[in-house]
Amino acid sequence: MPHASVKTIRELIYWEYAKLIAGSTVGNRKNYGMVMYSYKRLKNNEMKPSDILRENKKLFESEKACAYCGSADDLQWEHIIPRVKVEINTIDNQVLACRPCNTKKSGRDPFEWYGLEKKYEVPRIVLGKYLKLIFDIHEKQGTLDRGDLNQDGKLDIYDLGVIFKNV
Image (cartoon, rainbow, N blue to C red; front, side):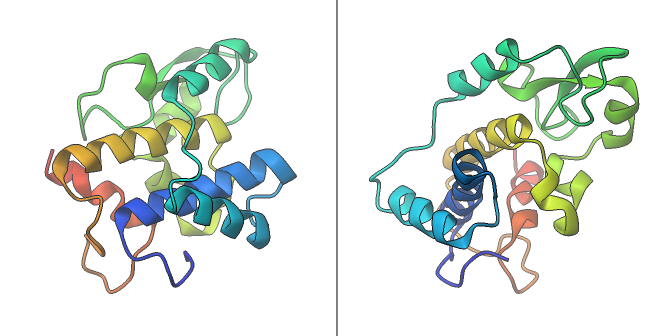
């Protein structure tokens, strides 16, 4: 669950991005001090999430392996946000995945596939791209400053993907 101060989709995306920063800087997405530090800086506009171009550079500089399991066998381009949810057929929405991972993930976004219990296992490249894409989609739909979109009484990662029903 995000910190109690996280009340909007924008803040939730910043919270998740702060965890990504903590993982990259101190090697632990659960490092509360680093997460809070980065979250506050993002929220106060003292720091900005990196551009999607940075994620694409990481993708092309990395080994040719599945973004999810690391396998080098039977690779194919996989849509992070499935085309059944939204038609973003660009490199910004793609990573390499082996056929088994692509098949298992199917029409789910990363958080739907990994679930709450494994949310810290979503690979860095996948999460970085997903958060940037989801921010843009919410911005276009005018929902960044709204709260519990799925109306389940809490703001969590599942509220991010609710937007796909409106796109």
